[in-house]
Figure: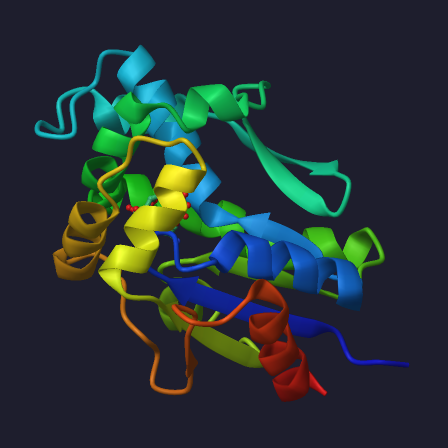
Length: 216
Ligand code: CDP
């Protein structure tokens, strides 16, 4: 029997994490998890509850009551907040883009997600997957330091901005990367044992080929 495989993919915004993780999950029968969507969903919910990332007033109470559950959609685990999986249009709005890195810098909000994210390993096992691929900013460094394969994706600023524009999104990716890299709590960093892949001049197929070679 093949061993259960844990793959961690980290990197800045628009470096190709989501496409790489999804495609890898399909090919290797892994559960796919986008942790950026978790931060986006909590940011949306905090904004809807009129909470600000600048003051901790009300945040802890809000987080202590929030219920997070995993649901399987195709090959991906998606997170419901108080019983509802938020729509893409809700979590990828420009308002969420502008605020997500500020909320994600708050240690209280990060610790609200830690247990949920680690619990997805068991979720993947129970559902019969051959492993999981989790992508984000702190997966190899904090959430799943025991991962079998750690990848760190990078791309130059011009390429990242162009990719976001093509997706039709208003998003200051360089600014988010700046905030994510400089925060104290679980910053965006490459774990010592992560393999760096610069995707600026590579197609998705070429990136996947490199990751599969590492796995095999
Ligand atoms: O899709 P994109 O790469 O633009 O971003 P995302 O993966 O959807 O993540 C949105 C934001 O969530 C990031 O800019 C980080 O502030 C935060 N995040 C984080 O702090 N830790 C993670 N593991 C994943 C995302």
